Length: 56
Image (tube, rainbow, N blue to C red; front, side, top):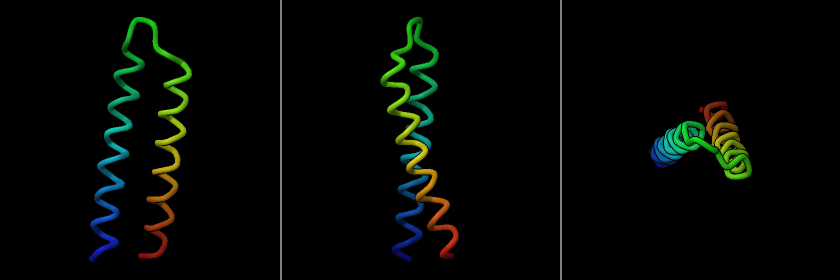
């Protein structure tokens, strides 16, 4: 059950990063450096989710 909790936490982090990316994009002058950092972090979380799903 611990892995399911971890998956839920990762999904929450992924959704939060998606929200932050959407907010940054909608700004009049998006900070491209910050946007790139958010996208990289989101990709790391997505890769971790995919890796864990493969173990299920």
